[in-house]
Figure 1 (cartoon, rainbow, N blue to C red):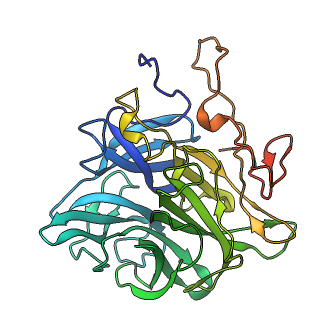
Figure 2: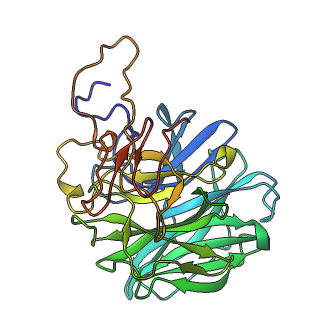
Amino acid sequence: NREKFRPVYHHTPAYGWMNDPNGMFYLDGKWHLYFQYNPYGSTWGNMTWGHSTSADLVHWTHEPNAITADAHGSIFSGSCVVDADNTAGFGAGAIIAFYTSAKSTPWGDSQSQSMAYSTDGGRTFTKYAGNPIVTSDKPDFRDPKVFWYAPAKHWCMILAAGQEMEIYTSKNLIDWDYASSFGRNQGAHGGVWECPDLVQLPVEGEKEPRWVLFCNINPGGPFGGSATQYFVGTFDGKKFRNESPTQTKWMDWGKDHYATVTFSNAPDGRTVALGWMSNWQYQTVLPTPPSTAAPTPSPATCRSTATAANLPCAVPPRPRWTPPGAKRRRSPPSASATPTKCPPSRTATRAATNWNSNCAIPAPNA
């Protein structure tokens, strides 16, 4: 590493611009990270899915670009699933990627949902001939997150649609039916809603789990610019119900935590989230090109309080990595290595391995 200011611990592209983490999944001992990538410059544009892999979420190997622009448009954010039962017909164990195709037209910006499949473990993808698979006339219609809902034996897709999230269902990952919308008059609406996720998490001290809906918003964060809000509630395979409709909850109280989504197919029933370590408020004036952002993994569980179940308002401290043969320098930790303390209205106590507030995140053990 000859670049003085390149992060050592966090993932960065070999060259170029990076923002949202995309399409993340785990398979056969490898964590796959795709990301919004401009391979031709250090500012946003030419959106492509870059690709890196890791065995421990710390040491990353850069892979060839995975999905590139086509006649349908640039490749915006999305997700991947491992189709173990061959529901889509591309082969058992195929990796199915879902992404937003975005392009400008004489009538305005067009955004629709497309898919691609991989039969070599996510290294290369073939685009589905019938793209796009989900369309809308809404201008901000993007970022599909797909997951399996076992009780009903169907796939679910949640995506951003203006100031709401829309949920669709499918048996084969190709044909999708609209099921419901969420978000009107709930949470913060100071900016565009995007990059959703919907995951089930255990609640410490309780038998019943909760569903957590991640909603990234830009602008409208508590300290300016972009941020990640979340909602806790129930989900029946078609409709999400927020248990605290009058509350706005923020996943992180720092400025550099955005586009947070989770890995699919994580081992041992874990839920591991990853966010973009930057902010749209100042992302165009960063002083250290060509690497412009670094995501950070965080495993999570929920803790119940007297009023509701909540996610953390502080991230755990993480060990700093020293290259082999190098001496450890005494220097300030990176942005994500410093716990972000809760606002005065909440209490935080230091535990042996994590910061605890309303919800505890265990230390990474990837």
